[in-house]
Length: 243
Image 1 (cartoon, rainbow, N blue to C red):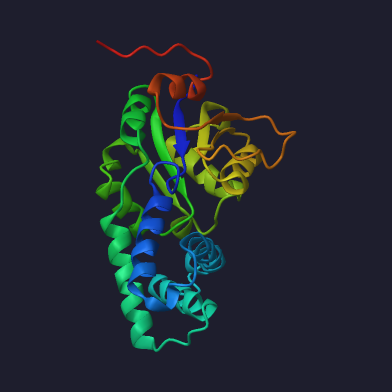
Image 2: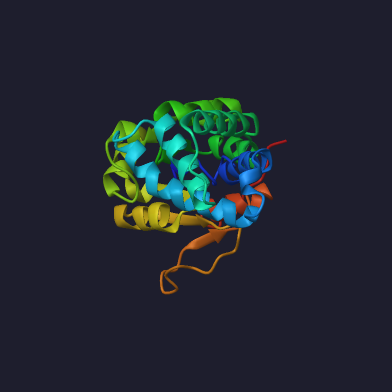
């Protein structure tokens, strides 16, 4: 019997991609230096810089605020501008304000968590900072559905390291065969879950090709309709809503 469901947070339950793109769009429009740089390319470049710097933040090697400023420095330099530090600080603060203002869950996240919570416990396993993820859960009204929150900052390791999944299992009081892991990142969520002996479910809203075609995993492309997602999570069981 499935006793718990583990979820990734960013771009699985929380719409990080939307927040980042909206904040970047405002930043792009606010600075004439970026006019000649297409927004899609701007977004891709920012994503590269984020992926490079985020592990340093998680390991405590650089403060979150400095990593944000460094991303902005690199974006300005990419368009041939050597910005003053006051401009960097202003741009970083504006980006952060926009990102927070546009925080929202993936459509269907709250309803899905409520449905899962009625049948099993809910855990979040995330490669991020504790306070940051707690704030997202609160702002998106998801906190009340979560029984266990495990983040890499607190755990001391990041997905796909099996140990971070094992910490979640220990806090839940479950074995790996009693849970599933739902996440959007193949290298972090899917690879990590498999290495821990947990059945993974790939959240793939962009319908990307499977990075490892020979690895067969369940796949969902949205968090709704709830009954369809619940059938995947609970391994084909027929789930009927009460009432």
